[in-house]
Amino acid sequence: QVQLVESGGGSVQSGGSLRLSCVASGYTYSSSCMGWFRQAPGKEREGVAIIDVDGSTNYADSVKGRFTISRDNAKATLYLQMNSLKPEDTAMYYCAAAIYTPFRPYDYCSGIPSSGHGMDYWGKGTLVTISS
Image (tube, rainbow, N blue to C red; front, side):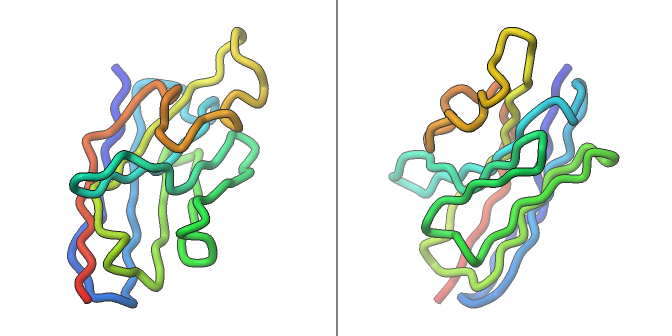
């Protein structure tokens, strides 16, 4: 059974930092691309960052230079280091995984839209609240 469990959310002031973690289990972690997505109240879900099996990354323009996604395959853990946080970063943050299979192209994850459609598994989320 695949599980993704996020942690590290909380409430901080604008300009502060948080580090989110997502522990994966139930599948071969190293054979998946991983992503962080967020959804603010009343808004659509949006992609924050994604990291592929080769370590390549992609970020939303709104977080470039402030957030860093990383993965530790030995620990089956995904991270999101968030610095210089802004009130507009307030949202529920979700970890998601897309597993490469022989039936998927090698660049499958590069085609994942901001909505996250195409990711196979999702965590339950961790709440990030940034006050001004």
